[in-house]
Amino acid sequence: MKKLFALVCAAVMAMSLLVAAADAPAFTTIEPGKLLISTSPDFPPFESTDDNDNIVGIEPEIMALVAEKLGLEIEYVPMDFTSALAAAQTGKTDVVMSGVTASGETGESRRLMFDFTVTYVSITQAIVYKAGSPVTMDDLGNVTVGVQRGTTGQIYVEDAYGEANVVGYDTYSLAFQALQNGQIDCIVVDDMVAKAYVERIPGLEMTQTTFEPEDFAFGVYKQDTGLCDAMNWALQELIEDGTVQAIIDKYNTAE
Image (cartoon, rainbow, N blue to C red; front, side, top):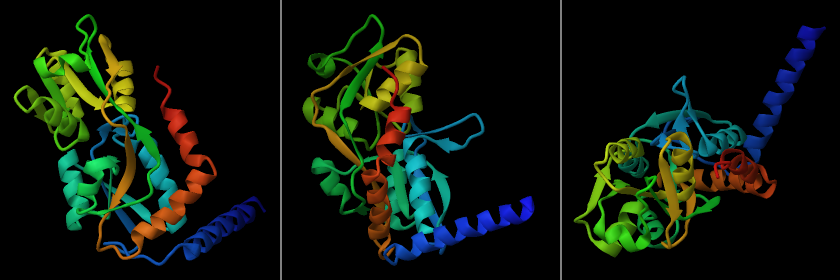
């Protein structure tokens, strides 16, 4: 009887997923039934790897629910941020999921590369520095600033202060190693990510910048017909019922 009950429950769950997927707008993906996602998983709390090399965080949790609603299996393709953007532009992946800014001038330029889903969170840039050696907005033009290549942090700092004192890194992991080793004076990075690194690495502190706030979304390969609309259908439901905010609150606990 228990075995029969379990089989019935599994069948009901499978049918509910099929019904949900049937309600979604029609779409295509690069590989039928699969959602290929490029990501740079050194961006906590949005995406990082756990002790078993699983990709975890705010965006993987949201994307898992989106994929479930669409009846898709996720396959992550880890790479550096600039390559992750290019992968969704050129059709190596269906989606780029890596804290991608979809607002402002940066968002407008990226819309030439891929389509954007609806935005789901807003952030601002922050400055991370060693405790006892504070760096403010007024100091950024006179210190060595670490950034991740291709990010809005790099764009904002170089536009405001020039490129001479800016050092680009492929990953934030490398940037934070450089900060700890005294090779740079600070890092400009999204505030929720700054909080996560400050919580993880002793001896670091942070302050907010006055750069323009940004909105994050997922970038979608333009040749995947209907996929962006289908993802928006699923994502909007998760936003409206409070699921997305609950996931953000779960991870955004660092003070």
